[in-house]
Image (cartoon, rainbow, N blue to C red; front, side, top):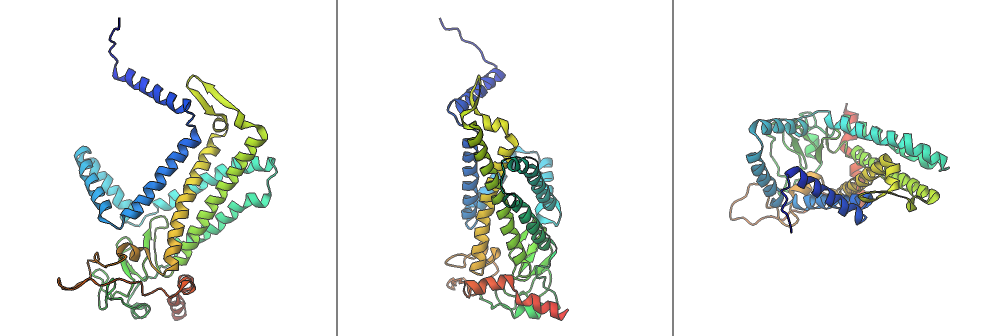
Length: 362
């Protein structure tokens, strides 16, 4: 005869927890499989955000999510979160610079204390092991230059100079327009940065990680900073992967498992948990930085900025709120009139003519 048993919430939660753990381990979904699944979700999410960012779907989802959250979270907590977000993303501060340096220091400390020593015992090439440090030095140089360099601030003194650099397309950038904040005539491809409170020539975006705008005069530093950061993460991922593979092959760790009541778990992860976590972090970082680097190289090769790519529609300039036209007028086609070939576009990034002119003038 079956006797009904009343389960408390804690008992039910514990049974569910045990069931899920048993399912995970008994089906041999080890740490690496779970990490790859998590990495795939992150990458898919980033790609979907990039695709939806040029449409109204993302704004609608954010607005709907904010409305739902507003009914759940107390108003005092909402105000505190809004103040924090405003401070982090709408004011100049060094929070993300410190976070960047802390993360970089933690990764390189783990690499130095564990992987570097182990790899020396396994007789890895010293040049191969020192490559991440060389990339770190170069990366920090361009990081500092990106932080402190002038992105191309427009002032009364150089206003006429910047007005002559780029042609107005009369679709995204129109003549005789003034910045309502700076009261300066707006050169083509310029934009007023609300965070830095200044107009920037060939404005790309405001980067919180360097606490500076990216414009005509420091775009080269930012591109090289991003390139060396991606290379250092990828190099560290390769060195860590080769170390773990060689360690597994030499010591036959792939045959070892740790067995408990719940099932199987990889012995390698239990032996080197910090190295495996660091490897997962730098692999994910390499994919994310690599994707952003490819996007930045695409913009440089086609002589576009992030601001222009975001605002410009591929077929029609329908979403330019500052462009005044009669209601009956046909929408004008937006074309990239500033691209003059790959090498010319790259030369414009690394050798901006206005920067040299300004140095001679001063």
